[in-house]
Length: 275
Image 1 (cartoon, one colour):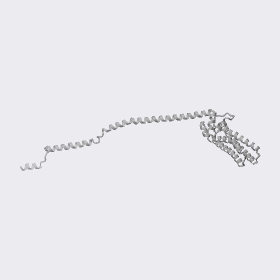
Image 2 (cartoon, rainbow, N blue to C red):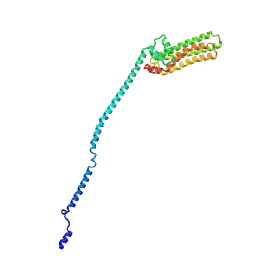
Image 3 (cartoon, rainbow, N blue to C red):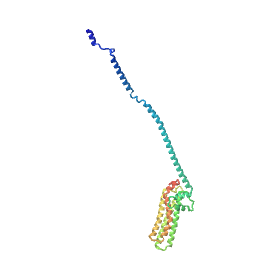
Image 4 (cartoon, rainbow, N blue to C red):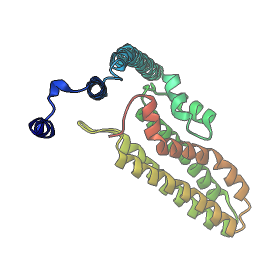
C-alpha cells in the first residue's frame, strides 16, 4: 500500500498519456501559428498582379510618345521648309529687281532719283544730258553733279551780266561778291565731279569720297545762300530776280545731296556695296 502510494506521487505522466482535449488544443494552436506564418510570407505579394498591368500601361504609352515625337519632327521640318522657301523666293525677287535695274537706264535713273525731294526734275535733268547713261548708281550720281555744275555756271553768268548792267553802286558791289561766291560754288562742284573719276585700280564709290562730296555740295549751296543774303542786306532791286534764277541750281544740288546721303541704300537696290 505504502509502495503504491509512493510510486503514484512521484511518477511523471507520459506524453502518450495526455488527455485528448489537451492534445486537440495544442494542434489548434499549431495550426493558427502556421496560418500566421503563411500570411506573413504572403505579405508583399498582394500587389504582384499590378506589375503586369503597369508594364502593359508603359508599353501602351511608348508608341504614343514615339508617334508624337515623329509628328513634331515632321511638322518642324515642314515649317523650316516653308521658311527657307520664302527666303529663297525673296532673295530671287531682289536679285531679279537688281538685274532689271542694271539692265535699264531709265529704271536705274528713277531708282536713284526716288530718294530725292524733286524726283521729276532729277529724272528729267539726268536723262536730258547728251551722254549715254550707264545703269550704274555711281555713273548716275556723277551726272547729277554735272547737272549742278551746269546750273550754277549759268547762274554765275546771269549774275555777271547783272553786274555789267547795274547802275546802283550798292547793288553792283553785292552782285560782284555774289558772282565770286558762285564761282567758289562751281569750283566745289567740279571737285565733286573729279572725285567720281576713278583711276586704274581705284573704286568710284568709297565712303571717303561720298563724305567729301557731301561736304562740297553743302558748301556750294551755302555760297548761293550767302549771295542772296548779301543782296538782301544791300536792299538790291534785283534780289527777287536773282532768287528766282537760283531756284533750279538749289533744286538740283538738293537732289545730289539726297542721293549722296542715301547712296548706301541705293547701292543695296542694285545689289552692290560701298567700298
